[in-house]
Amino acid sequence: MPKLKAGTIIPTAAEDAQIQKGIDADPDTYVMTDEEWAKAKPVARIGRPKADVTKERITIRLSPEVVDGFRSTGSGWQTRIDAALKDWLRNHKPADAR
Image (tube, rainbow, N blue to C red; front, side, top):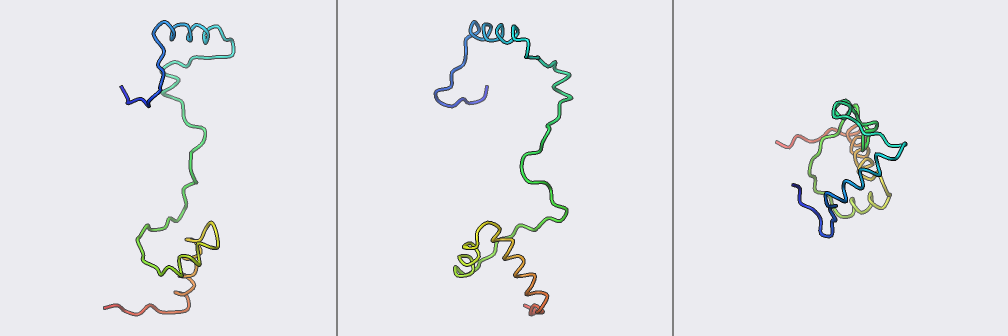
């Protein structure tokens, strides 16, 4: 049995039977069979849609001025850092670090 949060109330068998009796009496309810549950699929996917091109997750150390400057521009600041770095690459050739 899963761990329950403090204060969770579990109905007794008699209370559960009374609840089910009320559900069964409601003409607007429908109880799905196990077969119907197995066939059921979610209508919507939670979260953002999958991108055609995904970015690589890395760890990078930037100066506080850079981070603060981009963060102050609001949501999407990491995308703007990515765009700034792409722009730099179009105009510069990275030095060979060997």
